[in-house]
Image (cartoon, rainbow, N blue to C red; front, side, top):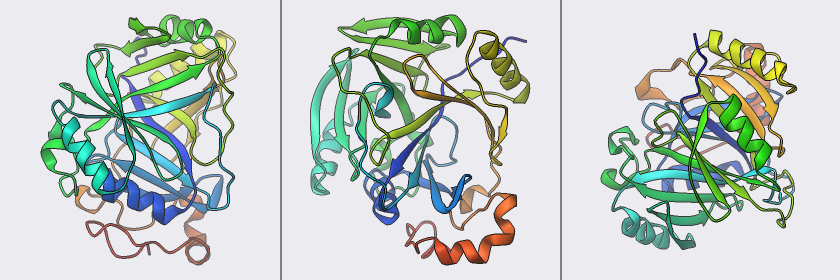
Length: 318
């Protein structure tokens, strides 16, 4: 058996105000809240999962909202752009939609032949929308406030900013099985397998750029997919053999994870494709707790900020 990485599993970022974060991603970007849970290491903090209709791997952007956390600095050693796929021909719709919601967006021209719109979320997290033929509107949230034919379908790619890209490139190609498929200036594009939406990562070489600092408005880590536990163990063994400091397998309840840092400093995770543990029609409707915190539910619900969830979910997070 040869271990494979089909593409991005999820991306996790840091936010400030939880309600503001929830409203932006559901009401403006039109993503579905597919999981409402808590941070495994800090259960007094929410962990939001936003994704497509069924919360499939390759669509999920998650957040730790820490209301009093300092603002981060976006820079080298980080994921500096989280990029979503929108259907080809949808750029004009999104320019109008974002303008109506007073979200500043920048025309970023074309990248590898595809139209790019750049924007930031309320905490300053850099986001992009790329109009691509690889987007599948059938995967979008069916009750999204965004017109279905133009809705976000999942990830297109992510951008890693690096002081120097060569060692990161070797990890991607020689170890993780990515292929270099092109470059534009200091941007190098790699794809997993046959490519397509959610199977692309760009490495941006920024030797003169500022170094990133963790905080609100920055990405905490990027996770890559692996189909099952057996392949994940293969990845752990191979990475350790190559000199990477890899964590033991960690049970995240919804999937299993291993973590390591790539040579430029970005925190990588390899996560198993998860089972869906809630009925599709009721994703994100109630606070789900890892089993170790279930006995503390009453206390945690007193501590966690009260939320107003999207109408498609429920009125309050209790």
